[in-house]
Length: 204
Figure 1 (cartoon, one colour):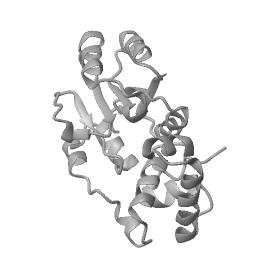
Figure 2 (cartoon, one colour):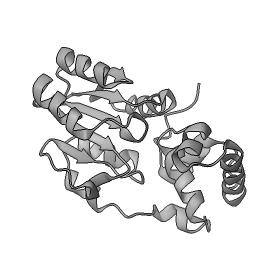
Figure 3 (spheres, rainbow, N blue to C red):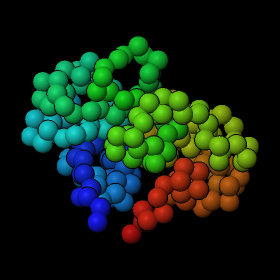
Figure 4 (cartoon, helix red, strand yellow):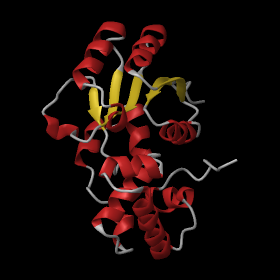
């Protein structure tokens, strides 16, 4: 008889409710990962850290735009044992280092996220290839790849337009081209086929 599976608690933080919903759905597939809170501001992050002492904080900083040093101070003050997984435009090249901080590249898969949460070789994340192998065969342009990456982590058309300073109409045009190249009909199918989102995470 195997031992009891260790559970880990996590706080999700983002300025995008769509992103939060997508990550929440992925995490629901794991019995050993418990989501204890969702935050949209630095103040909410601090409050939830103080109240839950969660094992992990996973936040998307490309919309929140919170100074990482402020997040660091919050963690060290409110919950010093919490590990922080973050998405950020600058990433590991920003020069920021902290033993409890792990940068998650945009092209990372859900499986790699679970490996970090379960304490399995977190350094592997920093060595992730820039392009998911499954995207190469479709002949995507560089912009299409960028759009796919943001869709895979839950960005809306408006979020993508703001991120690249383009119109939502242009984003829709890129999506149309992506769907034609892949034979895919919607965003959810794109996540399944390109980024291997767990098949149980069905839209209800």
